[in-house]
Image (cartoon, rainbow, N blue to C red; front, side):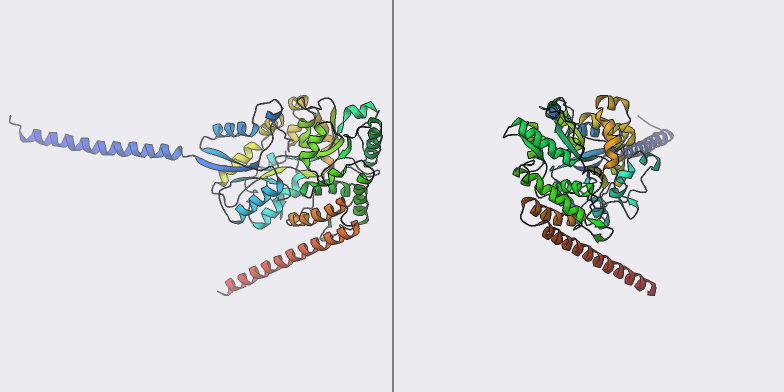
Length: 464
């Protein structure tokens, strides 16, 4: 068949145009596909935290943290949160963070930090200054008078308040009612009530007052509550005042608890877990614990439901209660590759809505004013109103110093020596004072060398 030349040209042109359109369309589809892939790229951030005990242990099957992570990921489909659950032991958590942060590893994005670590990590340059991220108006909802000291360093904010807890006194309400007592306001009352009830009950398996005497940070918190209640202190500015008359008097009182039989000798080496188990089994009249344990000890699923109560820590007569601030706050690893995503997660999990959810479904006390004023929450947990209005204003911090963890090591050793009777109060406090003064002197020398080095570097740059 004969095809004329014009037709061949038309057919060829159509084929060429078709090929060109195919290439163009393929390019457009590829570009669109690439855009979809780019838009759907998922960023994974790692949230390191201790296992915040939820109410699953007490009949509630909600895992509060996991539920909140699911909700966050639904709101932010391009961000996935991976949990790095740490052992529920402060010293082990601290060691884990130091090893990872000191190596500038980006494998952690969001850190749940004990209040005593924030200044240390900020000074070391391991966590981000969060000032540029903070919504100042929203931040005012946090109980800032309580957290301002622990979460700041050089007037900059390095962590968001999250879990609030403080020292608290748990007591056997049924036994106190039986003998016409109210919860003791003073330590002197606690001693008298313990001795009276122990004598009347005549039960060799019943102890008067359980508290944490084992050589670790928790014991230091226990001891500081006695020292602070007599207006004692560890530091007065840069001056170490641990050997003050007030501190000696408070420590002598602790020793007297064993001599009077109010506290059993087992307390000298006991920890929270041991004490809590004994108390829940009905073997204690009083126990010092953290306020976040209130559901576990007084709640409906507790063996002491209806028989136990919780109150502020007692004080010495003529003085005020001084429960120690505890809890974990949230910061961002300076080596994180995803600081914006990490901040979005912190903003979400510290929000009023998330804190209400945690308060309902876990052993969690909020760090926001608005949550304590939530009528639905307070109706379920009426104690929150008392805690907010009466206990929170009395809470005190441990020494606010980047080197506190080193101070604590000296305090643990020497306080333990006093508690077990290995050394006299005077000798132990002198050793602790010498050690803390040495730490402060070394830190000043180190800072001085760093400043001199920086100054010399600046001068060299100017010459060049």
